[in-house]
Image (tube, rainbow, N blue to C red; front, side):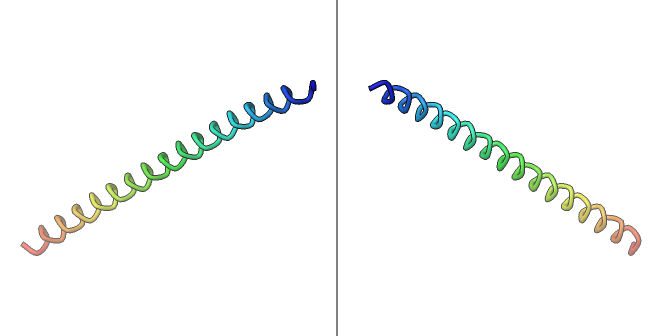
Length: 59
């Protein structure tokens, strides 16, 4: 009889931990996507600069 509420509380606590973990995982995924986008932007700027200097030398 006393065991039922305790199990219910544990389930609620576990559900909260699962939600927290999944939101932490989602935030980490978003940070990784942002880092990847920044790498792509940086690489794109590098390619544009490289092309610009190459065109300048050819003139």
